[in-house]
Length: 200
Image (tube, rainbow, N blue to C red):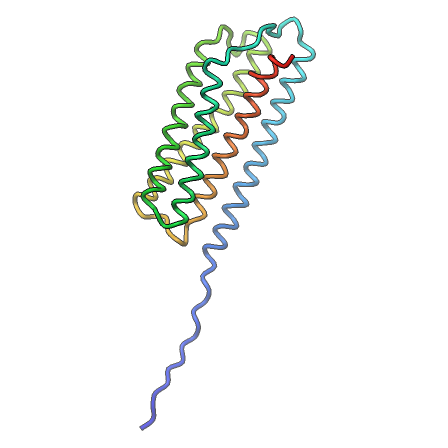
C-alpha cells in the first residue's frame, strides 16, 4: 500500500494590501501636492496685492482673540489623529476610533470658531481686495477642514463596523497625512493674515 502524497501549490502572495497602500498613499500625496500649489498661489496673491494696494489695505493688525486659541485647537487635533494612528497600529481598534472621534470634535470646534471669526469681521468678500483674499483663502481652507472631518468620521465608522483590519490599515495613515496637511496649511494662513501685520 502506497502512501498518497498530495502536493499543494504554494498560495499566491496577497499583494492587495501593498497595491492598495501604494495607490492610496501616492494618490493622497499627489492630491496634497496639487492643493499645496493652489494655496501657495493664493498666499502669493495676498503678498503681491498687499504690496500694491496700499490704499485699500487695513492699517491695523487683526485681533488674535479667536484665531490664536483656534490654532491650538487644530494643532491638538493633529496630535489626537497621530495617537489614533498609533492605537490602530497596536491593534486597539476601538481606542483608535475614540481618538478619531475626538479629532473630529476638535475639527468641528475649529470650524465653528472660524464661522464666528467670519461673522465678527467688519468687511465682506466684496468689500476690498483684502476682504476678497481673506475670505477666499480662509474659505478654501475651511472646505479642506470639512473634507477632513468627513474623512475622519468615515474612518471612525469603518473601525466601529470592523471594516478596517490588517489588509486595509493604510486607510488610517492616508487620512492622517491629509489631516496633518490641513493643519500645516492653517499655520501658513494664520501666519499670513494674523502674524505678518504685527511684524510689519
